[in-house]
Image (tube, rainbow, N blue to C red; front, top):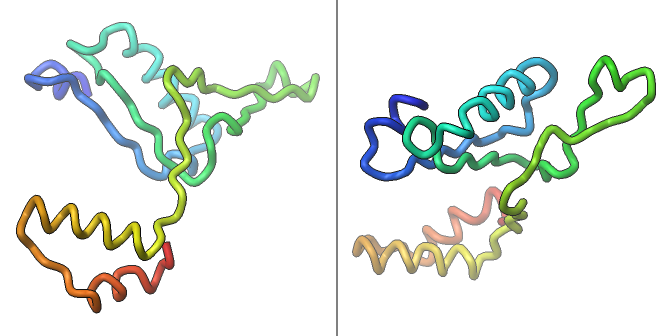
Amino acid sequence: MTWWAETSQKPLVIFFDEFDVLAGDSLITLLTQFRTGYTDRPKHFPQTICLIGVRDLRDYKIKTKTQEEFGVLYSPFNIKAESLVLPNFSLEDVHTLYGQHTEETGQNFTEEATRYAFAPIQG
């Protein structure tokens, strides 16, 4: 990440998909790296890091060994901006998104293609 941030002409933004599958030491190690690099942004560290997953990070709790005896859980996240929930897309939403793509690229999507893309996931 440091190399990207140092060589980029613009501030670096990184998206971590399925972040909520991390747990235990792996999660703590990654969060420690984020915290360590935070003060070096934007010249040597990403300006923004987006953690994407199914669960809301505000509900993510960890039990440390020290707190285990007291049964206390804490959230390792100090969310600076906000936690967003993206709802499922309706068929109308898919039409809108494909329409925006068509406007920008000229690539058309038939009604059949749009319905085909929507059918397996229903949103």
